[in-house]
Image (tube, rainbow, N blue to C red; front, side, top):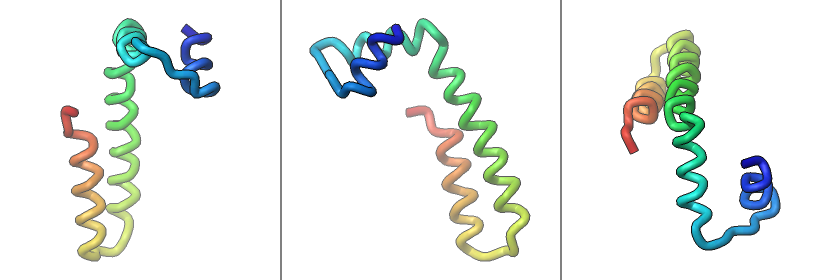
Length: 74
């Protein structure tokens, strides 16, 4: 698995079937769930940091953007 990631990400050597193989590896190691968990964790930290700022319209926009990124399913 490490050789595959090194070849595709570090060496930028892309071959036919690499995308399907990458998806299979991510699924096998439960990578999608781990990524969602990390997004929720860091999104929560971002929302906490935004809440400390004085209210401005842009604060609400940024908070909405964080919430959208956490909640989206694609």
